[in-house]
Image 1 (cartoon, rainbow, N blue to C red):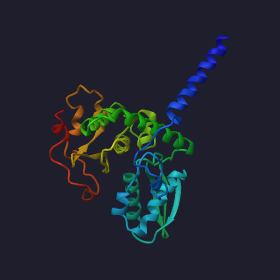
Image 2: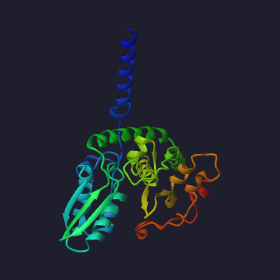
Image 3: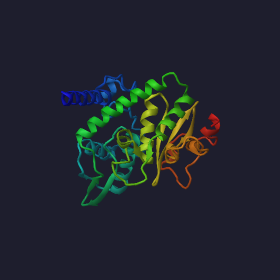
Image 4: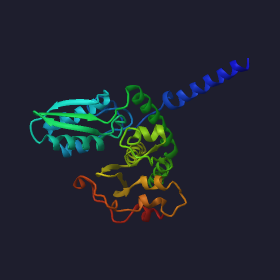
Length: 288
């Protein structure tokens, strides 16, 4: 009898967990419209991409490379070959960067592991894509966490929202065992694994900001990733990795991720595509 009750209890816990994290009804990202869902830009309900970097980095004739990188990730293709006839390395890398910056909701995409250009063809391999079932359940879980965050912040000012997101992201663990894999480079790793590195923190922040009505950009360099965030019509550096690395909110350096005008020893790519970044920092503006 006790064993039967124990099994019923376990079953109820499993049902509650599945419902709460994966199947609980939610309103979803307020920016995702039926029109957007029917567009080529739609991947899932987590994020509405303007594909800004696609339109500003790539020639229209090269959009097929960008689209193939997305499709190969969505369909779990690790090795892909596509046609290309000139400037193939530049076209591939710019397409990869554009996907990385435009689509933080593409939780199965980490990056390109290897590529080869020969005989008017590009062959590339993706870093281990997530399986379709992990992508499905991961997206469901993130969507429901977004609903929790929207509810938490619905009555907050923009200042309070930005600090909330910084605190929330920094409350997760920095993965000190650094590897360029899906285990720590994506929003999936952040929301389902509870730890990440700069790319995961920046992508998670980008998703959250859009869902709570704050404008922001992803910023990428060869060694780091962070965000630019808008506050009262001006853009500032936001780097939650600093807070996550310290993890101690009482540290006088905890909010240094809001206290920079540049990222030390790091230059963001495509700087001419971003709005002007203020020399006054959010840390100063917010009085932190």
